[in-house]
Image (cartoon, rainbow, N blue to C red; front, side, top):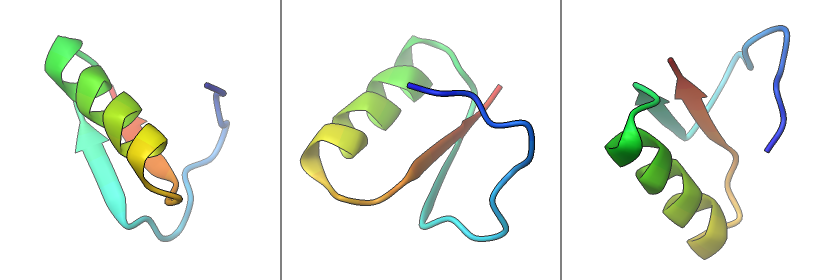
Length: 41
């Protein structure tokens, strides 16, 4: 996990919300796919 100071201009997946469901979804997608997952809290 890393933190960015600016948001990417494009994303295939954006998860809004850093609660247990949002972060769990982001973690699973990052492990199962090769795409960059962006989570906004």
